[in-house]
Length: 281
Image 1 (cartoon, helix red, strand yellow):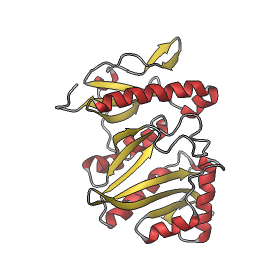
Image 2 (cartoon, one colour):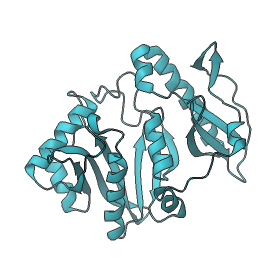
Image 3 (cartoon, rainbow, N blue to C red):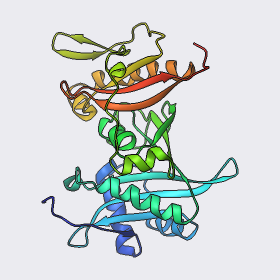
Image 4 (cartoon, rainbow, N blue to C red):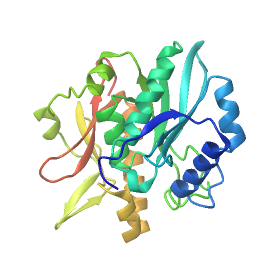
């Protein structure tokens, strides 16, 4: 499929649309996935202010979808974006980002200024999308948020640890990020200590060592956790454990995940965490 493929972005509206969405859920999360959103729920969600929208290719086939529910948090309307998936052959073509932008436009028209969702902290491409392409802000790390057995091949072996992000739709950060304005990585970030890995020969290994109380630290994740799992599930579990331990340690002490970047030379991937002013060490 060429990069010239044009996509139509619209709400799911027909039984065929809903059936295609269920098929894409199975492609993405596996045939045994127990948390499928059914056609009826996809339809009914939209009747009460939720969103079920898709990207359709030149042939009218579903290339990706986004699904979420609208409710209230602390007395204010908020949208929870529960699912985002892109058909494998269309990955890397901006489909996911454009679906999120459609979601944003619809919700702003409805007077809703906040979307929240989760992603696996070990998936670098999702960290890049959420932090660098959308401008979402990480608010919380939740161990095993969806339980240990969803039936999904994606979740197998490592549990379902998740980062929760807030997307403040009208913030300056989001506006600048969506228009492509990104500041260069601060040199102080690049020189800050890495807290959960070490170099062993030519390989990077996750470790659980002493965690320095510096005002700025880096937390490393693998470039491709699926490749790691294919090589060694035990190594994947060590990545999960070292990342969870370090992230919870710093968040509990008043640090915030301030961003994500990939080193231009080594292609190693890092979150960077900053101690909030006034927080106790």
